[in-house]
Length: 318
Image (cartoon, rainbow, N blue to C red; front, side, top):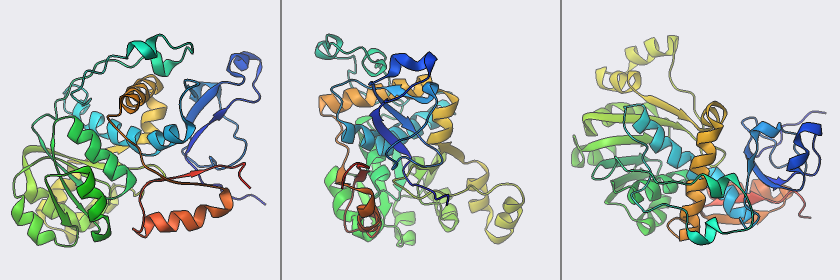
């Protein structure tokens, strides 16, 4: 019978290829699978949807980048582009190192990393659901970009969030407290939770000309469908003007759409993050590496707040 197999981010080697893709044989590659299937031992995918990786790239770290940091980075980059601003790249000297340039392997990830600017510098950024792996990546990228980061999350994630470093943190349920404390302060709000009850409060903590982005995350976080069409009428009737206003002006980001719409940009951004990883500027969290039969138990640990990081599935592990 047909069964859905989880897994949206894959790293592996090409073991078989068509006539026009023979050049990919035995090459280390990565890809995003919007419909899952990444936990399988073999995946059939079009050559154009593959990103070539350096031979020296650690497969587990690359899966973690694909699961967390690429979505976080592109989300912040995307929201800036939507407003006619430069990409959000962290304010670091990001030219590829001489060691990388001189490496023997020829890979798109070592060829396209460049310099990027940071329009987020000096901005106040609020991350909701900040304790998830993607949320922590958002904090890390925004901090590197020079932003002052604020966070709300489940109480069980407080330790992880404070370790990575934020200006202020509140439990998500204490809405009235962080609304009063941060009124009119936030230049950017990134929502990874999708709870429309928070929208009126987002309106109050947002600064003039502030921006709000809803993030449809990868397999490391909750997915939700934005309020659209007829649902907007119901939403507007049930919620006050403030919540409706936030909903109607929201910017929606989806990493899978980003990958499909502009794979060249996706490869460039992944190259940039790989370079930051080599420099030690970012450190994706790998919680565990397990076989497929162990996945459910490990995932429940992460979702229950008792642990944090990416669960890497090794399909060939017994």
